[in-house]
Image 1 (cartoon, rainbow, N blue to C red):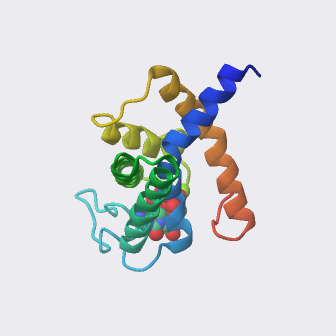
Image 2: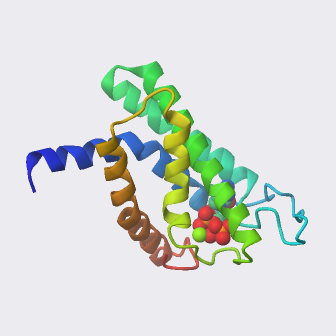
Image 3: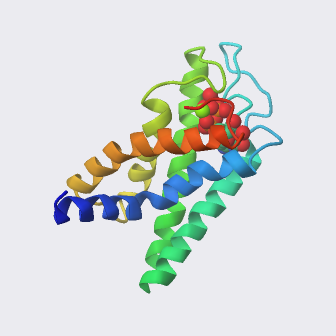
Length: 169
Ligand code: CTP
Ligand code: MG
């Protein structure tokens, strides 16, 4: 691997890390009242489903923002990374929520997989939300999209083996 490619991948992970943390935190810290309060949409299926909870959303938002704060402390650019972390976390959780909304409309049960949407939906929304503030280059965006797929699958598998998730994907 050339140095340039290695730096691109490390830079991409560093950039998107708060979104990863925001997406993973609810698996450990989520639960309780669902965000849709059990309500159904016009198609009589759940709006988001039981896998999207208020506590999970709040935990993800806080955890992702904390990661931004840590990155800001490490680099001495506190306010930039603070806002960056918050927006990435908010975007990741919103994207994840909209993904579940789409899955329910397609009659995909909670926890059942929707390829690409499950793995990349949250990242795309995280990038969209943070783009007015800090837009990375296209090479970084492409790197993020490519590396997220295996990283997401690998962390899900670890979560499954630890008994945190019911499915290995
Ligand atoms: N979670 C949560 N609140 C959120 C997001 C996730 O509590 N806002 C928790 C739930 O326990 C959920 C787990 O994290 O089951 C894994 O998240 P995810 O894979 O996104 O949800 P699924 O259960 O697969 O549900 P869906 O089919 O709606 O994606
Ligand atoms: Mg899932």
